[in-house]
Length: 77
Length: 364
Length: 167
Image (cartoon, rainbow over all chains, first blue to last red; front, side):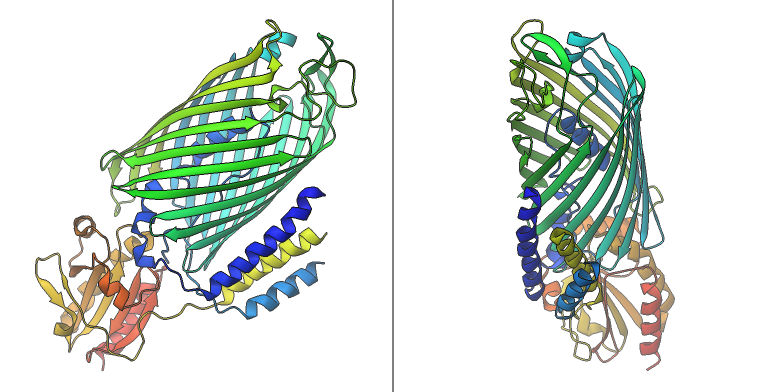
């Protein structure tokens, strides 16, 4: 199936990026994450709000997906 | 197949001396929402409730309840029927399990209307690396739907849905985060609406006929940038394509800032455009193997402008109830259809919609 | 078929990452880097002035949820051992010291709160997590380092403190 063929190289590339990431030092230290922890930088402040808006789009458009998963930023713990 | 995958994975892992930092579970909270949509002859409103509570150090349970009360005199309904009322109820439960840098999540959602039943099981893995600078998301979900027909008791068809999601969230600088998400969605079964008809030579004639499968892909990239003074900008782009020949682009731009210590305001602009399905037509010259006249599958563009205000009514980090806020949002949509016409006037159809959300959030 | 195999490989790889261990901040056994910082009391406080006492240095921030959870436990430890030759220094890394002052007051903290708002000390201590706790013995050497905070860590701190007070 067409979509499946594209997924494999994408996964492989990102896997390698991930491995590379393990060997690199993080360049934003945990104590430098203050701005990232501000609610204005959050991917999703209120899931109930985002879920509803997503529902409004999906019921009127042919597109689906591309939603954003959970993100990092705090660096806590 | 399973063993091979596992073996390969373990082999690579042993060679990685990664820094490991623990992730955190989502905050405990409850939200009570009232939503209202009014546009194109359709009015939908209702409540939504979301509750999340952590148990111990590793588990977080969540549940949601959502209702759509629909009064529809939409353009499709006008052509074919009279105004109808219906209600859709959705219930969901979920559990998140935290172990060091990984969060495993499981969610079940059930949505019921008088003529549609949907059940979705979703599993997600979120893993942080590089001291929390990178978060990897892998998700799989499976949906089992039953399509009914309120005019025919015996009608019951299945739809099987599969979703695979891959996402990366990456901290680029102390003031910037970027996200990349890729999703593959497949659906098999009875994919059209049993009530809708195709128009042939100007006459609403035959029920729509859709292929019994659909394979879609969506790829999205976005970034959030801190602009200083407790404000940020967000940019989002998504490309969608499927094997029904639909191609769509979504662009969003947003600006969020703290108006003062207690009030946060967000402004958002969204632009969406899609090309029609290969078997879509406003007016078919004759009967074809596949025929759709659903405006959702037509050539159209839409844009929306909205704002949201969040007001912190109290903040007490050391108390049991840590914070409470009141939120209000308004979004205005305009839909412009290129090749879907208003059946009555013959003109290309367009409509405007108003969407309101009002909700309370409590953190504990 | 292959798609499922690749997905499983990725998933297992990620599970495997659970086996890796964090690296230390500042080195155990070495002298703790000295520092002088402004404090909430108005005075400047210097680490070397506490030589002879067991010192717990906790690096925290108002924007870090586990740091907030830990504060009441740190206050309890301070109250319990301060009469026995122990001192707890809460080094805050917020860019704005006023926010830290407010939160310390909110949590009714009585241990010294120091402001590392330029994050120079955090850098010197090579912090790998927020919060980070460094426990220093009477001679000024780093003895124990704890990264992050999870329920039960306060018991570990108590154990470390008792061990060092006994020497």
